[in-house]
Image (cartoon, rainbow, N blue to C red; front, side, top):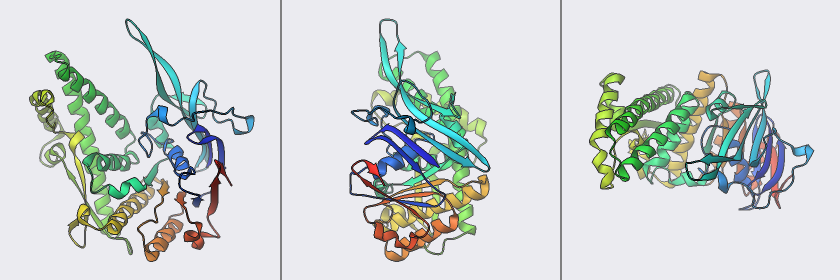
Length: 386
């Protein structure tokens, strides 16, 4: 991968020629290590590993870009990320950026940030197209609390696992979110147009059942893989979905579940007025259990939770490689925190065995001495990489 960043976070311009294998990025806290991983995550569908707003990513004082660092040509942008990636024998240039667009209403015009995507210089209409060329899985320090906080981060984590196997899943979840917000605002503003609301609810029910079905399929795929290919170091996990629509699909055909979901949404309209919870796929929880102990992840120790998370990542990586024919890029931000030496070295050995590209950040390069002869080591200092 040849990665190019333009006016992204703390980098005016940055180019990294990376090989297939581990890439260890070291530097002080706040030096910009995670920013590189975040840039790579934007080469996949979704909002990146931080879930940041598009406007918050660009540099405050953009620098002029020289010809040497010019990425895929995208005009009128505030930031851009591009990469030359190799898939099989083919090289493909992919890029994403933000440009200012104008939205005109009856009485005013407003500018807004819009994310655009290009494949080999051609603009494409959907971020999902990126999934044809690259997929990424990440672990960040914020995910240390994944099993103890609210359900949304776990749901987002699961949906990212689904993206790799079902490229349309990203589009479905984005469309569902858009329809839900429109439905919510109509009800909150007291606009009880029954025909309009029913149309939204019908579309939400169709998308919601498709989202639930894709999640169920991915959970089943990973559970089957883990059962037949148990890990020798990291704890084996059991994965479950806790959601009304997902459970209904265990008993009823999809078309009947859609009818039920549509009726459920109509019944819950009044909940919006009283700020009550709305049941559905946007409330589904992703539950993880330490299989040997029969213990839910949220009751495990911090170190065990990190190990369980790594187990899921490794299972997904192996399963995807076998199923899709290409491995994901691993983005591991301070991943060795809370791992003892045995588990740290085991993880590095598994990355070697998988033969994939893994970007690993740390403040201490000595923790990766066992990779000296095979990893690319990068050090960040004063917004420069060497």
